[in-house]
Amino acid sequence: MDTRSSLIFKEFAPTGLLTAMEGEDVPLFNIAAIEDCGPGDLVFVDRAKAVEIIRDRRPSAVVTSPALQESLTALGGMTVLIASNIKLAHALLRQRYVDRDVLLSEWPDIHPSAVIHPSCEIEKGSRIGPNVVLGKGVRIGNETAIMAGSVVENGAKIGNQSVIHPNVTIGYDCEIGNEVIIQSGAVIGSEGYGFAQDESGHSHRIPQLGKVVIEDRVSIGAGCCIDRATYAETRIGAGTKLDNLSHIAHNVQIGQDCLLTAGFIVAGSTTIGDRVIASGQTGVLDHLEICNDVVLLHRAGVTKSIDKPGAYAGLPVQPLPEYMKNTALMKRLSELRKQVQQLEKRLPKE
Image 1 (cartoon, rainbow, N blue to C red):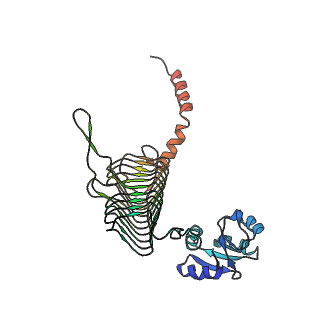
Image 2 (image 1 turned 30 degrees about the horizontal axis):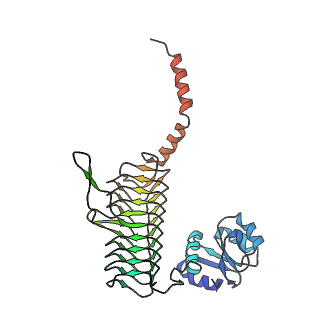
Image 3 (image 1 turned 120 degrees about the horizontal axis):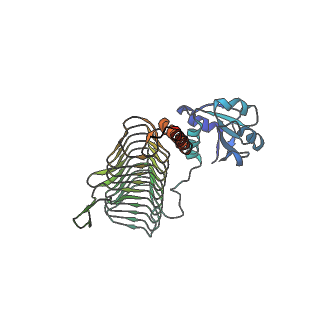
């Protein structure tokens, strides 16, 4: 990073993200954590406790909220940028100025160890790393990085400006959109879990010949598995973010802008709406429907469809206020049992 505070303000002020700038135009060379900052750094301050640290460490520029503007301006000697949303500013400024450039590599555009079928189409600016395998008819868009050891099977399509980290497997005929990030060890298009039993209890595989469709701006964490559909498609909606070690079964439909954290598991043919948030180790049974704007908490176990937006928790899930009351009561069960026993002793014996 080598820029000036005025250039940052000019770039982001028209978007409404930065609303004011106080102080001189200063050169900036890094975006740093509050605890490690110093001259030449830009930092993000979203809490009053950080003001004393800033006073001692003296970064060159601070991005903060209107509520903290006065206390930081009073310190003097630094530029103060006011943000309407500090966390969003943190995300967008770091992406713009200091993010890793996955297209920069010590390797050539296409590493000589890559195995690429002659029918593949690779658009300009893309990078194919060491030991990558691209099958028949694979299509790779512009400025996409396929990193070392990844396998993209025949007929798969990957859009523009996507990043496939090392040792990812993308199965045949699957479709990956634009600006998608897939972290190491993920498997997209593994065969869905479908078996039929005969009279002897032996299981017989039902071929899963559908595909997986990953829409634009999806992020898939390390070690995730997304199964291909039995017939049609398993789909992950635009903007959805999956944390590490999540499992999406065959024919699941997940909406847009969902946040699904580590260990999220959903069984086959369930439909999940837009903007659903799930905390770690949430589980959802098969053939259910979860509406838009649902929040699932405390290792939620979803055994029935949810048709009303809101927060739910527990196994089986309950509306959050009800769950909190029941949890509080559970802590007193031993005490309540003793009280019941004492009352029983007072009752006349038959």
